[in-house]
Structures are given as C-alpha cells and as structure tokens.
Image (tube, rainbow, N blue to C red; front, side, top):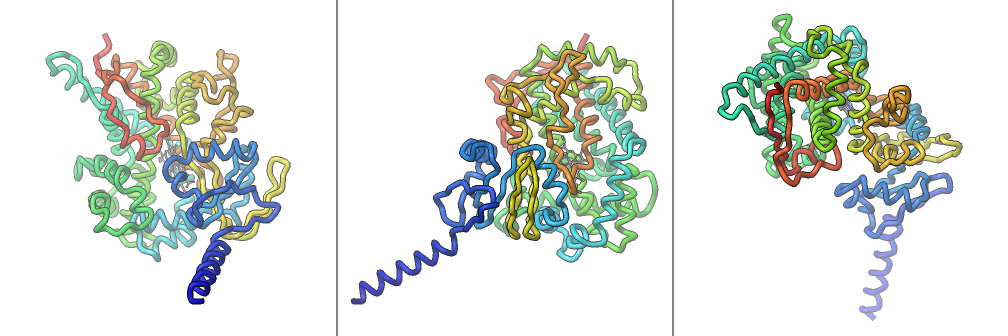
Amino acid sequence: MAGAVLITAMAVVLLLFWYFTTSTYSDGEPRPIPHRVPILGHAMSFARDRRTLVAQSIVQSKNEPFTLLIAGTKHYVFNKSAEFTEVFKNSKTLDSVGFLRLVMRNLFGINATDAEAFVAGSVKPILHDVNSMYLLRNENNAVTAVAYFDEVRQAVERFDKTLAQSDTKRITKDVLLIIAHFQSEPTTNAYFGKLVLDVDPKILDALNVVNKYGFWSLLFGVPRFLAPKPYRARDRIVHALRILVDAINARDGVASPYIESRVRQLLAHGLCRDTVAKDVLSVFSGVHSNSMPTAYCTLVELMEHSELIPVFRSELQEAGYMVTLPEDQVSIFPDKVPRMRSFLHEVLRTHNNGTAFREVLKDTTLLAAGRTWQLKKGAVVDLPNSLLCATETIHPEPNKFVANRFLDKSLGGWGENFTKTVKPFGGGVSFCPGRVFAEKQILAFLAALIEHYDLEVVTTPYKTPRNSDVDEVLWSPAIEIEIRKRT
Ligand code: HEM
C-alpha cells in the first residue's frame, strides 16, 4: 500500500514537473525545435557552438523562423533580412534593456541605480547624442580617425627602428601582438589620449584577460572568489580610467573630443567619477573587443589569400597612400580602396557570429517577409548574423570566401551590397555607433602592414578562427608571422 502511494506521488510530481517545464506554443509563434533536456532545452549547445545549432535548426525548420527553448526562455530565431529590419523597427515592444542592464551592472560593474539611468533613464539620451555627434557625424569622426592614422604612422616608425636594430632584419611576432602594436595601441592613444598607456602600459593585456577568462563569468555574475583573475584585471583598467577621468575634469586636450565630451557631460549630470570611469571602460571595450578579433581574422585570411596582397598594394598606390599625410587619409579609407573594403566585409560576413537580442516586453504581432508572427511577452528574439550571412538567396555560394563579393560589378566584382545584407554591426536601437571608425581602423591597419612590410606565416599548420568572437580568438593557438621591411 505504502509502495503504491509512493509511486503515485512520484508520478504526480513527474507530471507536474513535465507540465511546468514544457512550454506551450500558440499557432502564430515560430515552431519549436524539439529538445531532450527539460528547462535547460538547447542551452548547452547554444553556449558551446550557437552557429552550428542555429544552422542545423534552420534546416530542420525548412528555412522558416523557429523557437529554441534556452534555460526556460523561448528564443524566437529569425533569419531573413526583412525580419531583422522589422524586429529592429519594433523598438517599443522589442528591446534589449534587460541584456544591457546585465552588461552595465555585471560586466562593467556600475552600481544598480546608475546602471538603470544608463539603460532606461536620464543618461541614455546623453549617450545617444554624444555617440551620434562624435562617432557618426563625418567631420567629428574624421578628427579621431586622423589622430589614429598618425598614431599608426608612429607605430610603423617605432617598429622600423626595432627592425633596423635586429641582427637578421626580420622579426617574428604573434598576430595578437602585431595587432596590439599597429592597431590597438594607436586606437587607445587616438581615443583616450597618451595618458592611459603611460599610466598602465599593460592595460590592453588586462582587457584581454577580462575577455579571455571573464566575459561570461562577469556577465552572469559569478562571484569574485570563483573568478578572481577577470575581476582583478577589470579593477586595474578602471583604476587607469579613473585617473583619465580626473585629468579630463582638470584640463583640456587630454583625450579625443569624443571621450572628453562624454566624460564631462556625465560628470555634469551628477554621476560619480567611479561610474564615469566604468562608462569609459564600456567604450574602451567597445573600441577594442570587436575590432581586435576582426583585424585578426582579416590578417589571417589575407595570409591565406596572399595573391591579393599585390592587388591591394596597387590599389593603395593608385590611391596615393604612401605620399598622403595622415590628415588626408580620410579621403582614402574606405572610398579609394574598394577591393580592400570588399575583402574586409567578406571577412565580416564569413567570421562574424554576432547575435542581436531583443526581449519581448509586450505581446507583439510582427509582420515580416509576408508572414504574421505572434511573439509572447517574456520571450527573447534572436537575430543571428551568421544565419543571414549564410543564406544562399542573399549571398550566392555562401560557403565560399569571395574577396570581390562586395566589389562593384563595374570593377569586376559580384556587386553585392553589404549595407543591405550584412549586419555585423547590429541595427536599430543598438546599431554600433563605431561602425564608421571601425572600417577606417582595420583598413588603415592592414594598409600600413602590407605597404611597409613583407609578411610570411611561420606557424605550420595554422587554423583561422571560425568566428571573430574575442574569446574564441584569444583562445586560438598562436599564429606567428615573420615581418621584413619591404625594399
Ligand atoms: C569590426 C568592429 C566592430 C563590430 C563588428 C562592432 C559590432 C557591434 C555590435 C553588433 C553592437 C551592438 C551590440 C548589441 O546589439 O547589443 C555594437 C555596439 C557598440 N559598438 Fe561596436 N563594433 C565594432 C567596432 C566598434 C568601434 C571601433 C567602436 C568605437 C569607436 C564601437 C562602439 C560601440 C558602442 C559604443 C556600442 C554600444 C551602442 C549602444 O548600445 O548604444 N564599436 N558594436
């Protein structure tokens, strides 16, 4: 008798468990992809390799939007350009406020009250205006771009000296260090002023530690005693940026007009210096954490397609790169180097794994690509760029690396338009405001390298990272390149 009661009780518990952990779906919702593990759903495969998970799911759902249950939350995944655009347009009910809150509080360590002002309160419009004014308005963006081009020139001069002093007149360097020297340090000086690297010459290494060991643990609030390394590295960066904030508060001409204006406006708004330093950390991370891995994949892809180097060199020569002063290089990058630009966007298409997330704040009817979808409050919308980039109807032969894919047909290219089809910079309310600089940044880095040096990969064999995610690139086995001065 007691046994029968126990078995019945267990059956009831199991049924209740099943009932409460099985999501129900209405007709209008994207169809669910079946999963085996209750509650967790596809969480493990999503964390391990979301590019493969979404690619397999799109085949299973016959190219229709689908739903993945991830850690108890429904994720609606869309894969068509028109659907991306409609989701971005519905910013009133589809927003990323919860994710941003997590980023500001956990990743950058801003206190709860200030973080709220950043994501949904009075600070949000200040940042929107300062980003639009300095990062997107051409004449202001050009000021920092020119400072960056000049920093790249100085980096070449410094490297030339080291090269000239070496016995063999050749230096072998890890790709990460090449990018640090020719792109990340020049970017740091151009945006944040020389003070930052003077205060902490290892600040970029500290950012790598945060990105390598701590991105996910900080984001999900793992306590400090379980992940001391990234917390310590973050403290170190904030310490240097706090000194920068004090200096900007005391005098002019310390950093770029963008950073100075951002800092001064936040201080005038009443935020404490600690919070403002953490906001500068968010920009420090924004400026480096996507550009560094993109430059990495761009350089390694170029080494794999080394037949393009002479093509790019003649394009740079035609554009007058070697005889153009840094202050005039804004006319070269990106407009006068269409082949290099197409190559960069093909790297972004094939390596970018970014996903834009939007929370469904209210039940929403989405009309996109000729269909109507019912999105339920509490769910999340995922817009994985990798899916869009691998769609045959948008990009013929999507699995092939085609350097000329985005080059105009009149110049012998495939004539695809990256501004319409590739969304590595996101869109809508969180459309990357650094996208204009990012193109100039990576193209000028590449130009400086190939115009001044001959490059040869010495690591054999080597593997290009699949995704330009910062942690994936930092965990990839080192690739070394031998650098010689071009004669
Ligand atoms: C290849 C390089 C880059 C890529 C692929 C990239 C991509 C992105 C993406 C996808 C987002 C949106 C994130 C989301 O939806 O949650 C974003 C946001 C942002 N990016 Fe970039 N980015 C790059 C370079 C830069 C640079 C160089 C800067 C600064 C000059 C920058 C500044 C920012 C900022 C401030 C945001 C936050 C915007 C907001 O939420 O209001 N990015 N970036």
